[in-house]
Length: 348
Image 1 (cartoon, rainbow, N blue to C red):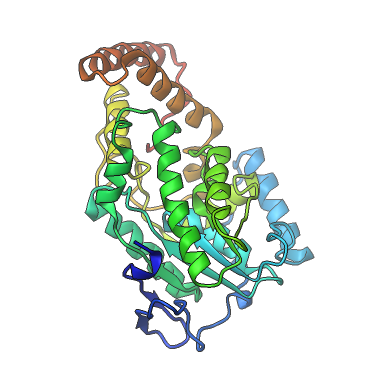
Image 2 (cartoon, rainbow, N blue to C red):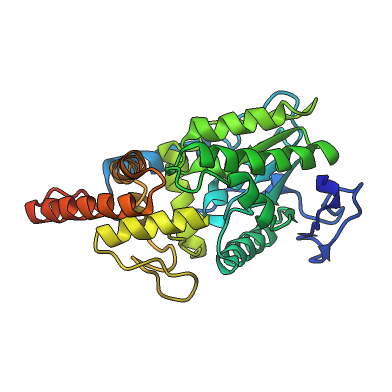
């Protein structure tokens, strides 16, 4: 099945109408406001006790604003139209803003294709929030299929792979392949993905999937950049706090949901809550850039993945062995808490 046969919708900022274009048309409208007219917003003020990295990143953002926008993230050569695969609004905010600030691009379009997100309720929350944000800033939004059956078929046999393992590679490949196909069919010059912004993701793993997908089609390039820099991370959380985005508590797939809840149970943390006004851990919505960013600190990220890899290595695909390994981990974490050696917990 080609991307052209998928149900696609977009909303134009200029005329405020939802459209379902024919297969040979792009999801844009002549009346829409040009993304190039967007500018950086002020962002959230930092508290006096903000960590040094956040202060330095904020100052660099301000300096870039004074020097002119669109000078740091340089698009691939001869790129005028970019199709940005988006996993959610929080990860897309700073990336869309940076791209739209470029004085060399004619158009940035957000492409939402994430059949990995489970359950459907969580999928709809993330999609609708991303869609509303795009409407607000005047960026076209492509609503692709919830292709969940194909996703599970492709992940078969990798149900117990650790985060950042082969299952994640296949998941990135599947989504980037669909993005590249749509870009090829609709005249885009480059593709990119918001998966590259999160420190919970292995940027090389994400970029490799992007490169492989782009190589399938002549004239399509993959836009790689250090989207995980301190500046981009700080800006991402400033925008998320300004917009009060929904704070998701796990990557998205059912296996991530399972593993995250196992990790929480071992750490004595309430299970993940899907939707609603109360999160399993912390706030339901982004509100404080510094506090929110600390949940993505390198120490916290490294600890989570060290545990995930240890569990996968020790237990493999055996459910009983997983339970034993999680009991060992839980006892160790309790001892660390008693000794005051836990660096901090996150909402994953």
